[in-house]
Length: 480
Ligand SMILES: *Cc1c(COP(=O)(O)O)cnc(C)c1O
Image (cartoon, rainbow, N blue to C red):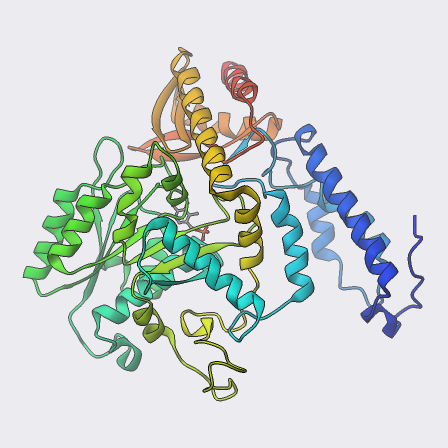
């Protein structure tokens, strides 16, 4: 098995592999990736990590002496790979977690080999990120002055976008005074269906949960624009400063898209920042079915879109776009003395990306997003996203045709449903289904009722897998 370089223990040679060792290990890892991805459908859709193995891991101290690469890779195959999270299995439909598109798996290794810090500078990784951000601005229709960053995910994108909103709403004062100067309170508007990331950002930004105005939704879980406008008007009348509206382009519960055009009109009328959470749903702008509904993304002041969701890029890959790139820089720019300044044409390059967000040392996230977009093209993405939506339609039909099941909600590629019977039965059903390994769906609560929730972001799912879910649910539901 071990035909590799025989490093003497703790030898300095471990830090500098000869080329033949790099190639040998690379081939071996490629073999593991190929086996893993090929055999995944035969494994449980949601394996559970054995309790004794977890205890063992936590009880094991770091090794004093190094092990061989082959020993480590064997351990990976034996003790890590089998206990996956489920993504990539054809019947894994939990949360918003797609399988990784293959080219991006390998792009991760290429990015790590280069290992640039994409804080800034005049090197390829910097320009690839600028290119990718420009592609997304064009895709959603943001103007040339827009700017953006690849970040860790929708949560970081939301925090970043709302930080710019706060900077603008306070006329920049927040950078000097914090929120300590006794100014008028700031309020944020989001629907009952908004993602928890929005509340988290509001709490971190010092807005406070109490100042989130929770707006009701209509019978399709979309923000009620009349209620939104009434809330803004009431705050303005009461001396409270509206900070931003956080609308959803694809809620995590049901895939609902808020009426973005009407919300943008309200924001315009009252001069309020429009943040759109499109972490999950924004890429559906590529589809015929949702293009018109999502065209108002072009009116957002800030937008979150997660390539690690519906663009099937491996975690982490989030994206924040801000219409006013100058405001974004002004909210975050703080250039330390150890960073060279001045001549843009030589060492420093154009303004650093670290001037537009929180991170200083920044990973080469752009490579995997760039490679995936180049590999599939917009047409490839359009086709795959449409296919996910089509499968969700098919799933909704199957549920409606099954008397024991109730279709509760349907949006984008999400279907929420329940088994006839109590919340408790549905709760146990979800757990038993996961433990059975036959399929995995997550859950949520809609209008006070516990529901099963299946989100298809999965090029591996076939029509037959949908039927298997219904069969498994009926089977387990019947036994409970
Ligand atoms: C996933 C998600 C988020 C949070 O994004 P992370 O990438 O998990 O940080 C926010 N909003 C929606 C609608 C999401 O689906």
